[in-house]
Amino acid sequence: MRKTILFIVTLCLFSCSEKKTLQKISLVENPNFVLIFMDDLGYGDIMPFGSINYETPHINKLAQEGILFTNFYSVQAVCSASRAALLTGSYSNRIGINGALMPYSTVGLNTNEITIAELLKEKGYATSIFGKWHLGFQEKFLPLNHGFDTFLGLPYSNDMWPVDFDGNQISDTSNWRKKSYPQLPLIEDFKKIDEIRTLEDQAKLTTLYTEKSVEFIHNNKDNPFFLYLPHSMPHVPIAVSNKFKGKSSQGLYGDLMMEIDWSVGEIVKALRENNLEENTLVIFTSDNGPWLNFGNHAGSTGGLREGKGTSFEGGQRVPTIMKWPKVISAGSISNKIAATIDILPTIANIVSSDLPKHKIDGVDISPILEGKIDSNPRDHLYYYYGKNNLEAVRKDNWKLVFPHESRSYKNVLPKNDGHPGPYTKFTTEYALYNLRRDPGEEYNVRELYPKIVKELENLAEIARNDLGDNLNKRIGSNIREPGRID
Image (tube, rainbow, N blue to C red; front, side, top):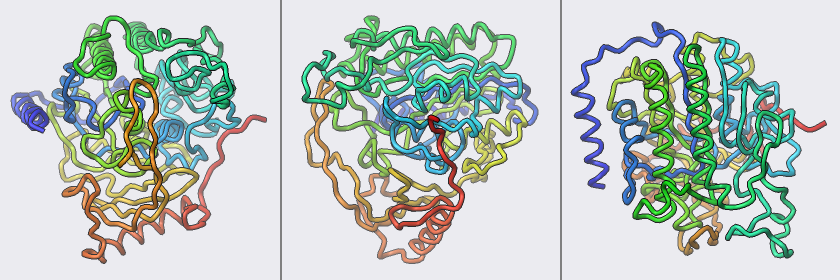
């Protein structure tokens, strides 16, 4: 806690010392966009949000020179759903993507959806992705059919391979599902160029994605670009290159976070070397919270409740930093609600692009980037999970949780060193939480604030009529289909 307070004070001092004249977004021409999307990074996993036992100096500097969001959300706490929402500006259930697509899935992101890459490509931007895709592995679903010029990375999560928790090929029938997985392919554009077979192979991924990203920046210094860097980790299995192995006091997870921090530093360094830093919006965020039952190979929620796979704050509230020296005041902090679905409409406004003709759910948060403290682009958020279950709704500082079955990491011991521990299931209570005073969602104050409950129930009805709600057997009026293999 003392480190967190010290860091926030440092942010304030840094901001006060800056006298730079900032530009309005409407006056900025052809900014570049770098979107760094972590996998299973917890709210408390980087120093600006309270981590200890390892250093993240490059991420710290990103926060000191940009804006830190304390109430930023991924709209579902699971891989494919979160990525679909990020790239399309839509709640993932609106576009028919739920959960995590498996290596045998026959659906993917529909080509009728408009992604950030497609929007920017129409404006003459070079677009590239280096890292994890996870929106369909068949050719029709791969990134080059969704607006990206180049792709190098994995088609889905790095644990979807026929390897046990110790990195050995599965030979018996004890884990029949994983045994049936194909070898994990490394794909370039549409072609498999290699296979990830061992933990040593996994250890090369962070460096590989980073080096390809740096190369892309150097090659596109004379034209605007969108770089999407969705890291495969710290999703398990975690692995780290030799240059960071044993460097932290928190074991392998800390080593990995130091390598991720190095990666951020390399990206910013490449921007600076090409005189692009001032006019590049760098976004650093995560797809969901930590997978807590993996113990020392999982991250920290920073005191938020539960983790990945839940609609509690530890599952969906993610550490987020944005830096854009021409526009964002250094050392800023925003407590406003914002979400990954807001990135597409914000970028659309920045480049003066029309939004998709179909309905999206994101809002333009550029007023927050410009420091307009009275602006509140998003005052509410829906927490959907699973197959279209509306599990909670937030408005301002209030969160109403509806009874639903949830996993829980409480009261069971995790396992360590890459092995998963158990989690329990329970039915949540009908509860109202004041997230400003109670971010850990411990104190149900529903009986004390009936008017707030009624207001949030009315807001939930709007969602149910639009997006549906399987918990209440409601069919939405504006749901689109995922893409399917013919």
